[in-house]
Length: 418
Image (cartoon, rainbow, N blue to C red; front, side, top):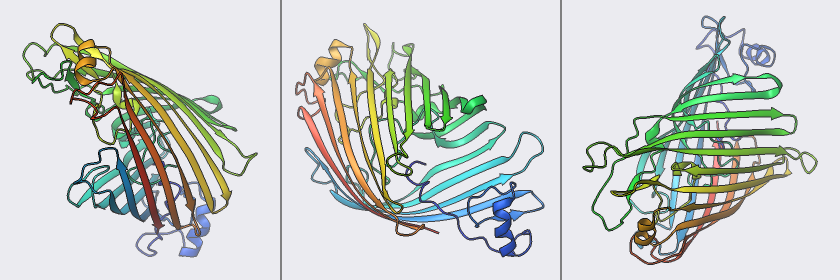
């Protein structure tokens, strides 16, 4: 969890409910020395009969957004708020075989005044962030994709994002720890979270295609953690197939898309303690969700592929680059400056003509100021500017309403952890 883990703390233990190792003070002393309870603070519950360490926690967020983009709908809320209650629960059970069994849970209950970049009535939402179980290198559950590296690190808030993939989904994975800080992961990740869709090449066609997402995405990652930082190479294989029965004659149309990515994080202690730089770039072919576009209006949003009766499936390609610098002004005050650029291309001539563009450029840049006067309290101010424009633009009423759109996102946020 990129923007929340730095601020999460654990909920104080309820002494007497479980068999602690001595009185609460003795249990707190035991935390620092007992490898069976590897919690980095004094809030834990040790269950001797189960050889399990339980670490509960909670946090609350209050967010206010002011955002708009070119041709912002009159019905949309340019100013709206989000109230969040987050609950966390981490457990570590010592097993004789395969090492410790760990579970991680982070769930959120949110009251939203509006959806991102849009209107809609206020509503209460349940938002799982992480629900996983890990043992002997295996991971199963719901969490961020193993393809991700940067994943909006140090970008604050619920809604804002930089260009680049940051997706949470159900998965099953195995990670092998290798010598010299290397690790290798193979992951099966639920395909419908990655379905960019399949559109008719002729935008004026009434044909509608449903994408078959029964096949999972196959994701691999190889990385290393060193004394100067870490890096990772990622790859994903993504099936692009029309669901049978949605359009006669098109059910057999299928192809494979893919995405590759490389990222590096370099620590910069020579400038200030805990300073760091992220650099990341990706290329996609028929797997558009891995590009991580930020398209506030949703106009001229590319699918994984375009279908024509004569040419079959024409995959959409794209690439991106993302960077971030985190600087710590004082032990309680830090700033992140971040930004990204992405471009995608349509390779079907009919799609280019009918949607009004051969592709699009997307870039954004942002910065924040994060003040943590105490270990439990954080205040955030953040601004992001986003630009989205069509290449070889023609107004066809099927793409952008004009050649480009500019968007502004201002966030004020308060956080408190228990």
